[in-house]
Structure formats: structure tokens, C-alpha cells
Length: 62
Image (cartoon, rainbow, N blue to C red; front, side, top):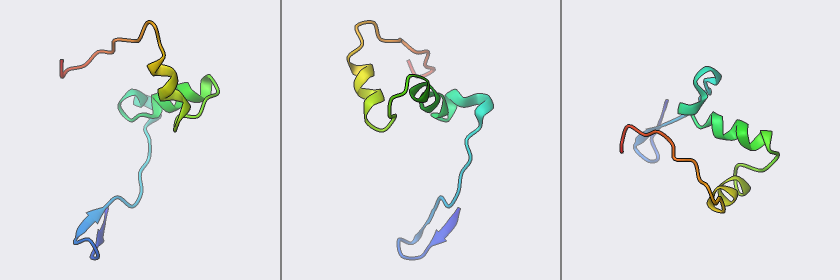
């Protein structure tokens, strides 16, 4: 984190993804997009929305 006096707040200056527990970081979705050769930024979500049998993930919030 670093201080940004222009917005009177702190901001993230660097980060690293943990590949050992990728599901919690979003890295898992990025890896799957690469695996099926689609862009995570725009194609991956569109394909997911077209699914006739979507994955019902496990959530502690349900």
C-alpha cells in the first residue's frame, strides 16, 4: 500500500497471486480462460452466461 495524497487515501501499489490456492484469488478463472483459449476480459463471462447447465458453486454466503 502507498499513500495517495491527491485522494487523501491509500492505494494498492503491488500484488501477487497465490497459485497454490487460486480459487480465492480469481487466478483460477484466469487459468481456465487460458486453458480454453478465450479472453477473460470479455469472452469468458459471455460464454458462462450462455451455459445451459451452469455450475452451482459452493458459497459460504448462501
